[in-house]
Amino acid sequence: MRIAVAGANGRMGRMLVEAVINHPELSLAAALCLPGADEEGRDAADFLGMKSGVTISSDLSVLAHADCLIDFTRPEGTLNHLTACQSHGVKMVIGTTGFSAEQLATLEAAASEIAILFSPNMSIGVNALYLLLEKAAQLFNDDYDVEVFEAHHRNKVDAPSGTALKMAEVVAQAKGRDLDKIADWARHGVTGVREKGRIGFSVFRGGDVIGDHTVSFAGPGERIELTHKATNRTIYASGSIQAALFLRDKNKGFYSMRDLMV
Image (cartoon, rainbow, N blue to C red):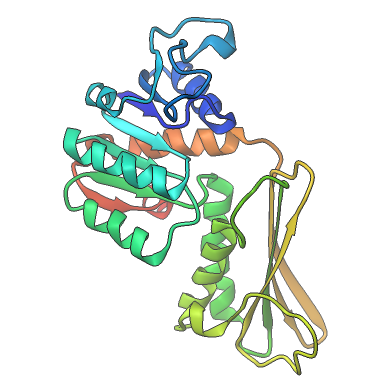
């Protein structure tokens, strides 16, 4: 399977390039960067001290050589890549976060033409946690207050994280509710007594934290917490590779990591 990597000159992109090169069922077909990037024109595997034969390029026409693009960039960049992938019939694995509802609708609409697997977190462990949260939300009534805590490095630009939002959405949907109507995004000043059935968020940004997420169900006399802590970013690359292989026999459709796991 021929794989293209978006943001191939970035930290996550380099991990994806290395994972593709080392996988026996995959080959690196294209490596994308922003126009004017310092790495443009260099071999995509230079950072590994080896040659892949693929040059980092901002020219999206190189996608014509790929079967699937793995994209962990920004919403605007991903949507730009989406148009090119539609033109060339290229599948997409998307781990980008920070999409608006309108942008997500654009992704879903494009899935009528190409196969897309979208997940705000490609970790197998995180996606297993979504399944556990769904069950927990069904077990605990509104006497158990739900709080979502997440921590990331100081360079992360969106908050709450896409993973935190997904965790809260899983809980809300399991309870048959709309997250936007029950979310407390921030607290300041005299907030009053907490209302039952609300979902609160807490966000930490600092240092080089890769990603910590905890969902607490705080009830009378006890607190149940489900936690995932990322200790190495390679989990996202590994999950993305599995996602690309999942799409190998798919021509169109909008998928998630749940489809891969269950």
